Length: 308
Ligand code: NAD
Ligand code: UD1
Image (cartoon, rainbow, N blue to C red):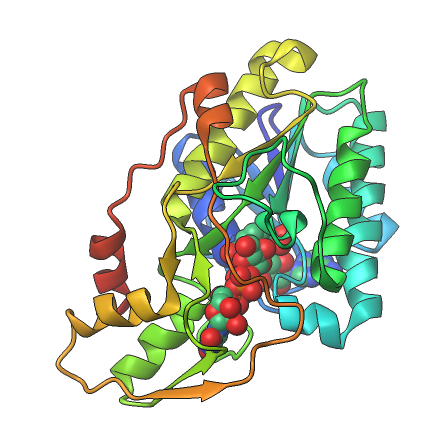
């Protein structure tokens, strides 16, 4: 295996597929570890190695780590309600496996360890937009386990590490036909099929939607900076929001969708989901100052694309 290989855990998932293709297009070798619980088969590529396995399994982690220069950890149960329904799986995958991976990666001397953290760590915000200095107060298993994983990563001082707190990521390629997918994927799918949309709560909850291409550029920007500057990188030992800086309510989203379809959109309201956060929006100033990252996709254009 060449010395530029990157391990992408969860590389068969929504964000993982986009990230893997981008890394391959930059002539990086990629080793994907995925149990395909929500991931889809990856297109074959001469520089791609896929290890089908559970990231909780030490032998799987070891097999992958011996082949790579750097690590990006995306494998997780990404659905907030699924983590509520399956607390032991959330703890095993989202926290314990991540913690072991970080420790073992650091011990094996990799050049960079990056992790997909989440805005869910902030819990119910006291003020918006959120920045990285704001208090952490996750609610629910997903947020709590992701917090422990982030803490485990940032406690490693001897390796270049960085956590990206992703806000609500959207774009083509998110798992379809699943009630556990992101809201924009579910809504677009239902609109196309002429099915009613379910809104949990009153629809006034807001989210900061960030396109998957921007998330990929944030990971690659941080990866390259860590590999170049090691623990002296401006992103090393830190966590960063990855967000658009704008927030939309679900009712705003429905309005936007309605301007791109002739299908009638029918809404059905149900009680709010347990562990749901009401409002979320972030500031990306820190990542911008560190590596010049800025989101560059047009929300409306990308929303429209989901309906095609
Ligand atoms: P996803 O479900 O599409 O991808 C997760 C991948 O991990 C899947 O391919 C799945 O098969 C794999 N996986 C799950 N358990 C595994 C295990 N035990 N061993 C090996 N592989 C396993 O989700 P995503 O939206 O691509 O999310 C990727 C990461 O980003 C997750 O860590 C998630 O918590 C984080 N994140 C996502 C969002 C978002 O809005 N999508 C926002 C914040 C953070
Ligand atoms: C999402 C991510 C999570 C990430 C977090 C960061 C997914 C599946 N989850 O969680 O990994 O860490 O962002 O902020 O990508 N809703 C409806 N109707 C539906 C589906 C959802 O009303 O059919 C509502 C939900 O109750 C919630 C909002 O839409 O209020 C967003 O839900 P969802 O897309 O699941 O994302 P988060 O729970 O914010």
